Length: 197
Image 1: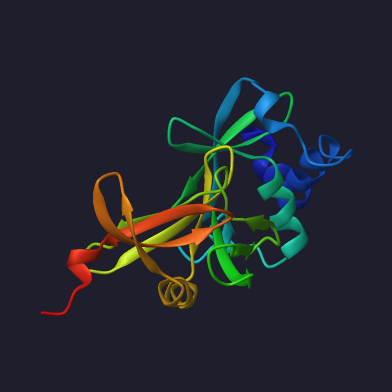
Image 2 (image 1 turned 180 degrees about the vertical axis):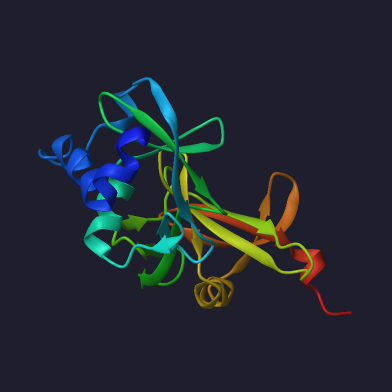
């Protein structure tokens, strides 16, 4: 994965180095603190597409492999192994939530998402939803916490599904519109802002 070997080994060389550190289940990247070895010409676009040297990486198994060793520190994203850490560029969030499953609609409902790299994540107190204003549109951008500070942007179509499941509740002293999953209420916006006058 070394930056100086980037040209020499290409994408397959990078993948080989990552595979060495991921042979036994999910890699414990949160325990690794290797030295920083520079930035890699790798970028994750808004739609979740991974690029290497400005070309899209078309092989999903390769993308999933790199995603498994992704780490965030102080808002910057890195690929890490036990021996080195390289910086990459992430345009928005590193993952995209592309599918939603709703179980037990109502107060006991549970929302489970699948990401573009096939992570299955149930929205709960550890895997929270947050909603941010979208500049220029007046709309909202929903995000799901995947693991250790890594987020997935929820596709717009799924946001409409979440809004359809929404309800009003008092939250921290304000009447809010939001959605429930696994017993946790995730506020989207003040209910008063959504009233039609």
